[in-house]
Amino acid sequence: MTVALVVLVIELVSSEHDRYYLNSHKDTKVKHELVDSTWRMHQIDLHPPSGADGVKLADVNQDGVLDLVSGFEEGGVSRIYIHPGFSNTKNYWPYVELPSPDVEDALLIDLDGDGQLDLVTASEGQSNQIIFHWAPTASDEYLNADTWTSQVVPQTDGWGAWMFVVPADMDHQHGIDLLIGSKRKAGEKEEDKAIVGWLRSPEDPRNIHEWSFHPLTAAGWIMSIEARDVNGDQLPDIIISDRKSSTRNGLRWLENPGRNHPEFFKCWNSYSFGGKFDESMFHISADLDGDGKEEIVVPDLYRGLVILKQENADPVKPWFEKVIPSPSWAGSRGKAVTIGDLNMDGMLDLVLSFEEEGNVADIPFEQYKEQGKHSVVWATFQNDPMNGKWEFHKISGLKGRKFDLVNLVDVDGDGDLDVVTTDENEEGNGLGVVWYENPLR
Image (cartoon, rainbow, N blue to C red; front, side, top):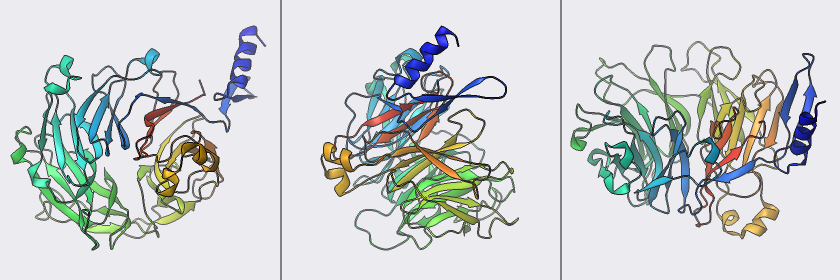
């Protein structure tokens, strides 16, 4: 063994956060594998506002690396964070802060086609608004909040407590359209008082009054939305996770009737994927078993990770449900999931986040540390995700209590996937946007 390799092994084994073990394979190559130590956490903001409510990614300045946006619900603002370059990722990131009352979701998208990414925010609470925040045309003014212009979309004002926004070109005309979903407004008690629909972009997207809203289905509490062709007719259907307060809670899909169909701008047929959910949270789609068909993966708030697999030729028929319980040392309330190859073994891994609320979030951190659980974990499966063995591994330590969307991206440019997420903790002492450094490299 060379001196350099000996030094490397000593450094890796002695590090509190970056421990590995080494396996020699028949091809004589040495492979690093992760073990159950927590990953090093990095905060990108020294003083985050209260209520970091998820993070989404986009390349703002077209430099080939992804920047971040997060809405801070209790803080009433959104911050767009610019990636500072690989050598500076462990420092605090520059950002622009924009007013976003009661913001629940924030999305970066070029609405008007001028080459600059605008911001769309969805608000609940007392606001219940979709807001377009128009970026300055000059790229060197992007971080100057005074050069931004914000407009409330009047067609959606007050419809519901807006929760989630995704881009989708629904009609292949003009600019990009938006799929939006809500939960019922504060004070409402009846079921099915929320809405899912799409905002249609006009010829001039800057004309805020020309955007049109087309409701597609009633709902109770929308957690996530995805445009995906479910039935193989080459049209984008819509998958929704409807958490609760709905007569059709769980995972279901809305069938696209086609742009030439008279029902295209009306309510679409809705079909349940099946499964018995307590509360379905953020979902994703992925071909876990490599059979050419995507499964749907979603944490159920209390039961564990749910995988829905199509076993009939007709997707309208109920899908097979597999439930993988969470490990006892992880959080008790599953929140979000994403998929990627964390240990670079050519197999898909899953990263899960958990949230704790109520009395758990109110106790002092030192007391929580004694009672707390790991809230960001990764999972592997052997051969068959539906019938094979699952193993869980720790990513986060015990710090942080209410995590949200999880993203996989090579933050530091070393060739492996890191984990980007947020700790909300609306009491005001949350971590904000954080990334966990993959110790593989």
